[in-house]
Each structure stands twice: as structure tokens, then as C-alpha cells.
Amino acid sequence: MIRSFARLAVATLPLAAIVPAFAHSTLEVQQAAIGSSYKAVLRVPHGCGTEATHTVRVQIPEGFYNVKPMPKAGWTLETVTGPYQQSYDNHGTTVTEGVQEIVWSGGNLPNDWYDEFVFRGSFASTLEPGTFYFPSIQECENGEEAWIDVTGDKNAQMPAPSLELVPAKVSGH
Image (cartoon, rainbow, N blue to C red; front, side, top):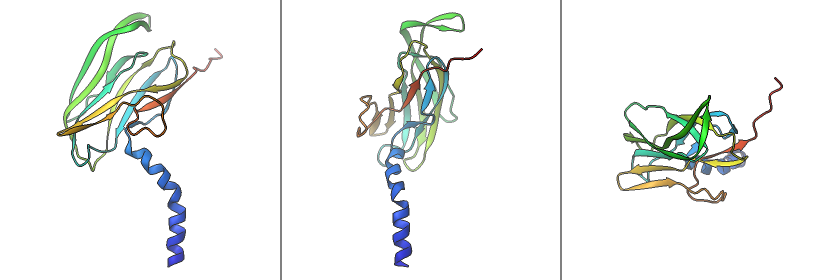
């Protein structure tokens, strides 16, 4: 019996290294091509300590445009729009302003539950390969979880959800 428990403990040790990754807000798909459209699924794994999350805010960085959030039953959806620092070509139409923040509010995500918040948009063809961040904030009754660290520090306590931008594949057509 003791040997079986010891084997189980050794076998599950690699899982312990994975568990902390689930404590952070993350994106489901962790890679996208420059110049491509992208469906972002923000995974919110818990509330604020023991409190339920009632608002989720996502900041939309420059270079991600034509943003459309998905409504979520039981939540109020708002977008904050404004001018872009540069213009983007959206299927032949020049776009100079758009969504800069998405806000889902009035919901109830208890600390013991998990949920996803979805939006889509396009990555500008002028972006460089590397890490692209979507800073996000969970608001609760008496506090917040601010996932806004964009330093790239692997030991950051509150890293912003991110993905790796890779060069677009050259088509053989």
C-alpha cells in the first residue's frame, strides 16, 4: 500500500508544475499569425479570493482591430471605442478607430467556478513576431484581480493573458 502511494506521488509530481498555470487568466489558443483573424477565448479560473467576479474587463492593444465581443447570457456587454494610433485596412476599408476595451458586467462567477469570455478581431500585418498581451481585470465586490503584467517575467504574479505572434505563412498561390 505504501509503495502504491509512493508511486502515485511520484507519477503525479509533474502535474504539480502544471497547476499554477491554471491559477492565471489565460487565452485558450496561445499562437496566431501576424495579419490573421483570431478568436480569443479568455479563461477566467476563479474569483477574487473567496468573492465572485461580477465584471471582466479586457484592454485591446494597438494592432488588434475589427474587434467584436461575444454576448454572454446573464452579463451586460459594453465596449469602449476610440481612435487608433495608426489606420488599418479592413478588406479594402480604412479603419481609424475601434474597440479599445471590452466590459462584461453584472454577472456572477463564483470563486469555485470557471468561465470563458470570447471576442474576435484581426492582427495587423505591421506587427512584429513576439508576445502579444491582452491585459484583463476581474472586479469583485471588495477587490480585483488585475492580470496586467506585460513584462514577460515568467515569475510575474499577475501576468496579462498572452499569445505568441508568428510570421504569416507565405502562400504558394
